[in-house]
Amino acid sequence: MKRRHFAFECQGARLAATLDEPESREAAGTAGLLLVTGGNEVRGGAWNGQARFAARIAAAGFPVLRFDRRGVGDSEGTNGEFVSAAPDIAAALAAFRRECPQLTRVAGMGNCDAAAALMLAGGAGLDALVLSNPWTIDDADEEAPAEVVRDHYRRRLADPAAIKRLLTGQVPIGKLVRSLLSALRPSPKAAAGLAAEIAQRLAPFKGPVRFLIAGRDRTGLAFVAKWDKADKRIRTCPGASHSYVEPHAQDWLVAQVLEMLRG
Image (cartoon, rainbow, N blue to C red; front, side):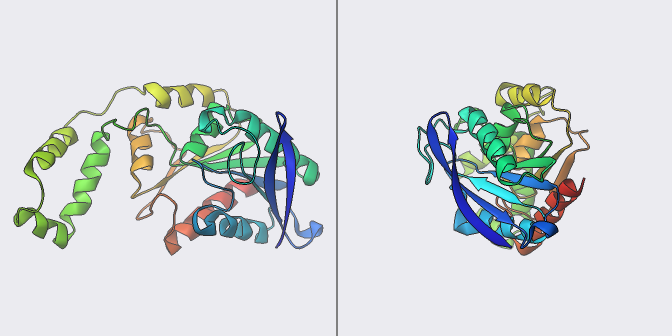
């Protein structure tokens, strides 16, 4: 695998990018991965996790482009958060195609609000989408969906230390009662707010889509609670946390992405 850095333009701002490629052009496939970062995370990812992930995908024969969107990391411009990331994604895709002219198919991948950004952009001209733990929370004070609360207590009841804290009075009763009542709420019959908006924006997209859910991640579980339960595009990794830091989760994530790239 070889790695190089360059910059491209987006609405008058210079954006920093990193391209990971197979060792030789002959080894490179005609499909590539555009990796979109979430939040204010730089293209290397937390603890360089996205850089390591990109290296594994490139070693399997698929070029990977990572970039800092406007106002984040090494890029110029104003940070408009994920809701304004569509031009950044489109400019990154154009730069990717210029740098790797052999590409005939590019999949986009994002975790958390990067997945929501790809959905809000309607796929941003990409050929396929890998959407991990999409962000669907409208308000920081929004109550967790009942499914998330129930999952939390299922795991707590399997933890002897948590049971001991409950039996010894170390858990505030008021908070416990409120949580248990929220767990009894019925699931929403239809998406609303951001969940409804990303569903509407994604609907016209014609390429293949895969939703990846980390089994222990509240953001991912909140998405599933608000989404169509019958959607066969959803895949779940049991025991995985939000960033798939567990060894088995990292291998699962790589396998899922490679399957999408191989088409």
